[in-house]
Image (cartoon, rainbow, N blue to C red):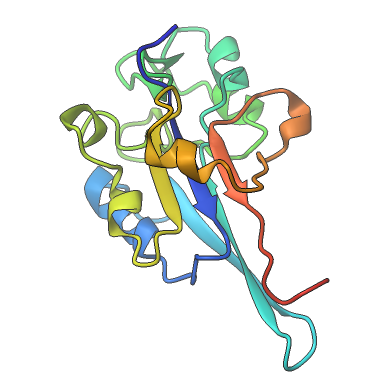
Length: 189
């Protein structure tokens, strides 16, 4: 078992849709225009006045433990590193798009600059390895993103997981390491 097992919690009740996380991701990872590693999708308003609500949904790699993108990669470019982070080795990637087609979360793309598959990596190589949080989690003004080691019972993420959380498309058996606190604002919908 890995020494660390990184994961993230997205609290949709705290998200205000400001896109700071997406902008920070783009800047930190030099993401080309017209593609993204992270996006906050906004739906709404929903409900009836005065009980209107906006829904915010994080769209990025969910760091599956049973990652379909890894198992279909013919070159080994898609892999899970020692800390449980799903990565892409752009030097090994041949751009076949198998991983893109296999991802049930539509979280991968071909980087138009490198020609290789690309996606969120929790800023592993440029931040997490140095003991820093991913760019998105470090910039979030409302604390909607909590990142940490799922193997550490004292980590902030483990404490936060005591809330009622869900995993995206959990029924697929991919075992994502992105947890979501469902939106409770606006009452029953």
